[in-house]
Amino acid sequence: MKLQVIAVGKLREAYFKAACDEYAGRIRHFLPIDECEVPSMSEVSSNGSGKGAMHAEAEAIVKQIPQGSKLIALDIKGKTFSSEQLSQFIQDEMLGSTNRLCFVIGGAWGLAPSLLDSATLRLSFSPMTFPHELARVMLYEQLYRALSIWKNLPYHK
Figure 1: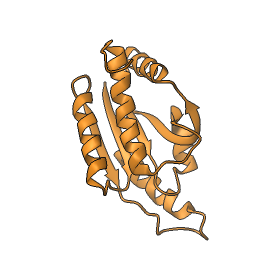
Figure 2: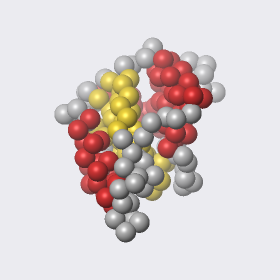
Figure 3: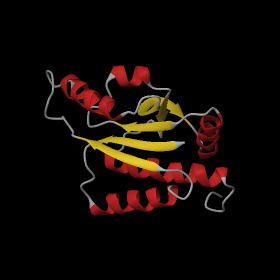
Figure 4: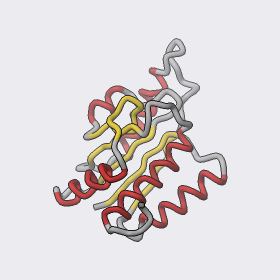
């Protein structure tokens, strides 16, 4: 199985990029992981609602999702998992012969309803809102933690 992270916008701060690179390198000891950034369209909006931006970003995101992938959308209204539950979810997907899990992080306006509706899982880290750059670091760390749990490594205590 492969993992893929699709994120709206670029990592602007070097420390966020360094953290993501560090965790991605650790993840690669267990599973291949790819990252794709799609342009932020936050300047495209419909009456300040963000619908135009979400629609444009959704089109760009869909183009990056390989056929047969399962989509995991980061969504503030999604389901919260413990690290152990995320690990179990990933293990279950591996056993179920899933080829690729695509984790998607939206932009300033979030993800379009069409993407949320097509997701296998809507995953929330918290009911709080986080900057998308920090959310990306948190996703990488939690993926690494989940894989460490799977392999029974001491990283997760």
